[in-house]
Amino acid sequence: MTAEQLQQFLLAEIPLARCMALEVESLSASAIRLAAPLEPNRNDKGTGFGGSIASLMTLAGWSLLHQHLEPGQPPAALMIHKSELNYQAPVTGRMTVETTIDQASLQHFLATLQQRRKARVELEIDCHSDQRLCARMHGRFVALLQDTNP
Image (cartoon, helix red, strand yellow):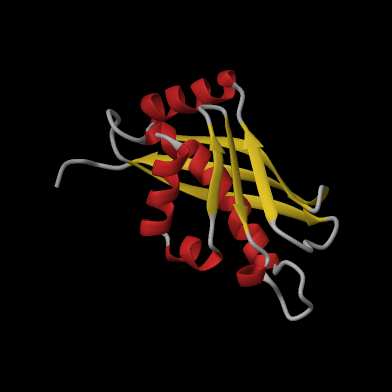
């Protein structure tokens, strides 16, 4: 999956992504960077709305894992299970979020999913705006294999 394909998917399938004007800046097997402008994601004070920041960060972790659950594998439900988000500075401009996963963690996640029909992995996701760290999320994502039999 390319960054452009992922962006098209997110904008088509997740209405909130359209409202946020989400952009996929970069995507690889082990890293993702999403961005969104301030204007559709601001609060009444003119800074980034906490819900938008949390949503963009959640979408980053979900999207990084989602690309590995695509074609050639049984369908899986992927969701955020638990998150802890610490806001450190206000978002005052375009926000970008980034997360990575090391190859060992990714392979363990995928192998566990195939063996046990469920798996979890934890990701650290950072949000930056105006060249400063504004928030950090620790998120646990869970995948469950879905039954393909009616």
